[in-house]
Length: 144
Image 1 (tube, rainbow, N blue to C red):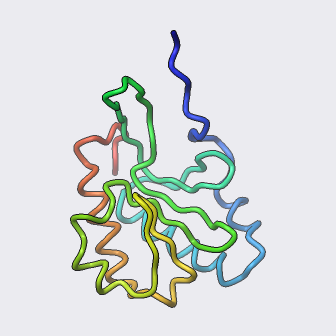
Image 2 (image 1 turned 135 degrees about the vertical axis):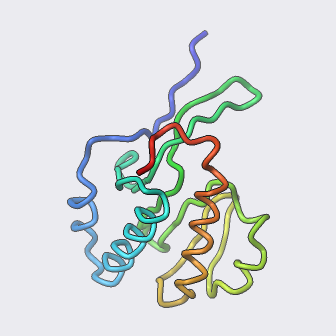
Image 3 (image 1 turned 30 degrees about the vertical axis):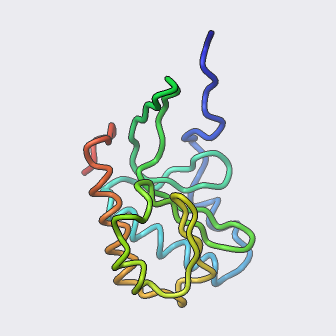
């Protein structure tokens, strides 16, 4: 029996067009700053993953269940209520950074921010770079 494919995959849609379509000026500016940070951290260009996620880099995963696929090393999405950053290894190894980050919420691998002004950008950069470094052994793209 064939395993189901991921619904969210990398596409050829324009990241620039997607970001330009964000109506809230502050959210659009925050997304541009996160894009620059993630491009620098991964050495990979921004790419759309599905209709609403901007991702950077690629890694291959395989679960014990046999399900496998490709996913972004890191990324973000300007959701209605929050700017969501995808920190793939999660936050367990980054308690010190999380304590200094500023106003945020987390899910398993999601960092929810209302706006970048609420967080320490140097700490956020350290968090993203640490996440990208942790994913390096699994990367399947060829970072610059």
